[in-house]
Image 1 (cartoon, rainbow, N blue to C red):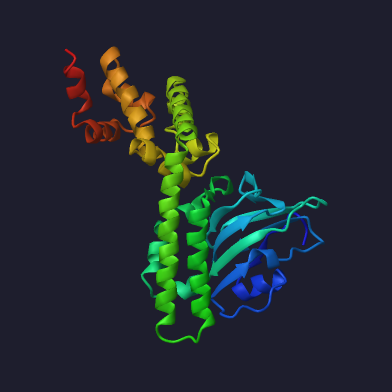
Image 2: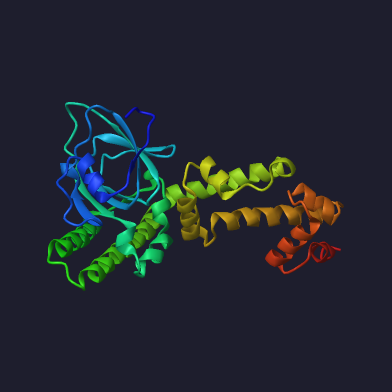
Length: 307
């Protein structure tokens, strides 16, 4: 496999085989001791797409992980979440000072979730769409909670499988994801300074975009555009903003658009159609509907309130 190739891992059994692990005890779910994973010495850079969920708790990994354009050194403990179909890469580092990696990987094939409440519910956990540099940093107490749940899952599928096994494991996975959601909420709160700097950068970015009058040519900034400029994944940015302001990224963009529309309606003599065009709307009716939906006034009614 060359460095440019992407390797698809279709099953948990295939993952175990490629990483030098014993055969999984269950074909659709496995808890792997990260310290036992062996990477191929023939390649120093590997890219993967897996057809199953991976929840990782890792520490002291001697390498750089990349999701998309984002890169992170795993020099301390953190959690990451990978959904089926996501591309990620590993660049192995070789040094006499490298430490033995530790941690756990919980692998869950979508077929294990089939016909359960979690099959659809798992899609609401937006951290599966976060970039690697947006991973979850855990306190020692939080880490102990997560490891305990993972080991409960392992104990259950190690035992004799019966009609209760799947339901018990599913409930444990859901508990783990709910704890992760709680810990992410804590992370947003405890990183207030950095998060407020992100909010300031967002405000500057949107102000520059709207003040450069390039809406006619480029249209409204998208959530993806804003996220790329701030070097964040769309889901992480929106959740960060919600924790600070109660508004998503899309709502911030719309608020800036309304602010610009109000400015033009109150300080210029441009017609509503001209303002709609300058703000990137193809049809004045769409602009009027959008404006009234956000302000409870039509553009003309807003303008008349200044007379």
